[in-house]
Image (cartoon, rainbow, N blue to C red; front, side, top):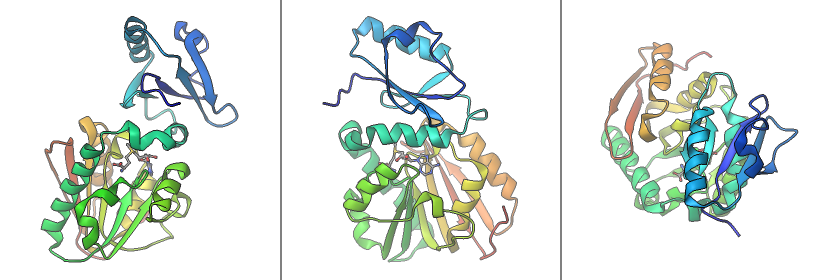
Length: 262
Ligand SMILES: C[S@@+](CC[C@H](N)C(=O)[O-])C[C@H]1O[C@@H](n2cnc3c(N)ncnc32)[C@H](O)[C@@H]1O
């Protein structure tokens, strides 16, 4: 039975917790031969939890989602295997873990921005980092001509697929595989961190006149992604950032049909 009080810690190979005092209280739940090991805590008293949180902060971890922890240092570790291992672990419980209204509200907000800029009635839309398909509960879904999802975690996207979303696997998500989308929505994903190649491939999925709209939970990773946007340095794209109840929102508009080389 899933327990909300349990904390999940994604530990990259090379960032061992074995020599720390919190290690005694952890259970190894998955990983080992992979690049990431996932550890879970036992149920804790409030005081023990307080101490765990302090220690994880001091060891360089951040609470990225509910009781899930990732190392803050983005540059030394490939976060994608950590993120997919973590979501693999919680995929079956994701819909119970999140405050759905918040995620659906975020989708509605991002779509309203896209709609204002695109001014079209029906559109081909990509939900990047679609998770388990909560987008299906947003009212605007009825308006879409096509809805496609993609997620780095196979287990999350399989749940979305069972609910009826067409999925592009993240392995086929490369510069060579160009489907064009009028709208790309990125809801509660950017703070996990994207690498430059993934970001460029994502932007290349925009059709001419297409728009990508993404929120940055607590503004985490905003600076990094703005750096990437500036790396594109291409007059075929414009971008802007605005505040929102869901963290800053980045809009990238593709003006012409040239694709970026990466
Ligand atoms: C907090 S969930 C949000 C899911 C969904 N967008 C929602 O609002 O319910 C974050 C999702 O982003 C996915 N994700 C994180 N980094 C990603 C990446 N680089 N590429 C694709 N998906 C990613 C995770 O696997 C997870 O399913």
